Length: 247
Image 1 (cartoon, one colour):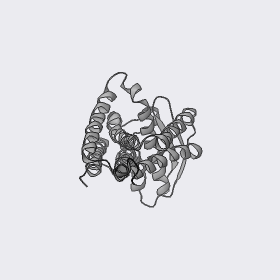
Image 2 (cartoon, rainbow, N blue to C red; image 1 turned 90 degrees about the horizontal axis):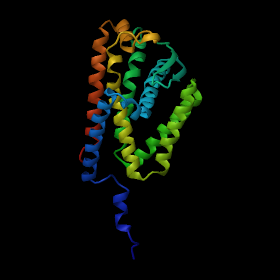
Image 3 (tube, rainbow, N blue to C red; image 1 turned 135 degrees about the horizontal axis):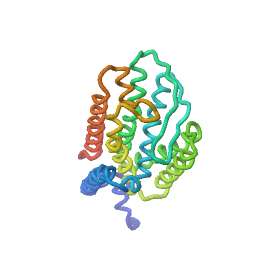
Image 4 (cartoon, rainbow, N blue to C red; image 1 turned 120 degrees about the vertical axis):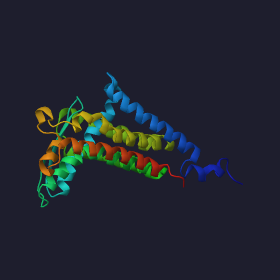
């Protein structure tokens, strides 16, 4: 004799029904639009503050890890309470000017690429839960290895513990929605820094990432800013299309 609820176990162990997926997609698109609007209004930054810090972490980790991939060093990562950050790294590349340009581009492109990976991971409950665990653990790991500012030493492990808590304690549907929401927020964070992408100077920090790309690859900074803005939107749309494609 079957136990009560036994017939529903196969459904619970697989991906959500198509109707639920479409409803989830609608809410996520609404969240992306609301996020973009909130970035532009007074007080919006406070509502989205945790996502701002996470996006900055993705950005600076992008610089540092790309430098490491090209044979250089990732020395430290500093995050500040105003949502800004600095990655200190050394570049050692045989690619000529392309190497430093790749490191400069890796910062702005890291959030949308990470966001797309998180959205794609939501295609199954298993990968959603695993990805949340990996993200939470890597936040904690980065704190030990690279984070060197007082604010970062508090904020980054706190975010890591919250994400790990969701992965370990939240219902599976909540894990799936959480990872999709994190992914969308990471992708649209590009539009929070539109003024930065189209700026030559980064204030006291020197040249912006796009201005550095101009130095190494000749074409003007606004060209690279526009290219990365368009690429971020394409990455978001394509990742959502793949994640919600009919099985």
